[in-house]
Length: 100
Image 1 (cartoon, helix red, strand yellow):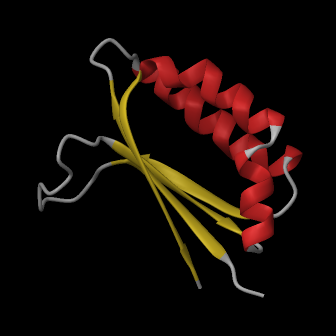
Image 2 (image 1 turned 180 degrees about the horizontal axis):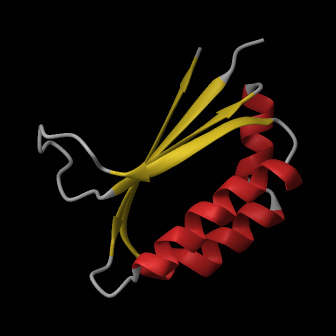
Image 3 (image 1 turned 60 degrees about the vertical axis):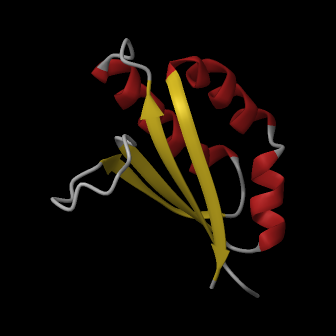
């Protein structure tokens, strides 16, 4: 079965605090305990000297056991709860999934 890597880039609103960003990353990491099929989560601030981030300041990758696990995550109530709570602080987001 093919794994799915869910790559998300975030550009936060200027008034979003570092504390709120840290809370978001904790909430995302905690989804591993409530949504089956999340095998891995990692994320953090942009750190490359290339400067190709186009204003996106943070990113994360979630790895799912299968496309079905990713699809279940997308509509899961806990994922929705995190989105509702934190999306107001996000100016722009890119989500890009690929299979391995």
